[in-house]
Image (cartoon, rainbow, N blue to C red):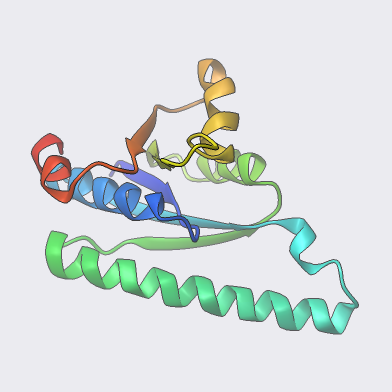
Length: 151
């Protein structure tokens, strides 16, 4: 089964990426893999404090995941998977793709502020010519109705 992989973060545009991935998966008989990447510099403290912070970060990720997973189950009939990795975002995205050959499309949400679409979108756009799978960039301002129409 082809999976749509979407990156979970705290951005507003993440919501549209989640919606798009779930709707495409539901409409094509695919699955959804939600990937959250914990940056390595988040825990550069004493070992004990770093471990507590890491666990709190994982709890927050799981809480966010459960919100999206409930919506996907209830509205789209999709049971998403969760993967949590630690490291540089692009490196961990590529590692996840390599380790899970069912991942067929990476779905990212593009930011709408004056800073541009976001650092991950910019970095992956630079590497898109050699990226191993298609990347779908979902505009952050796209309405729910428009998303439904194009998926």
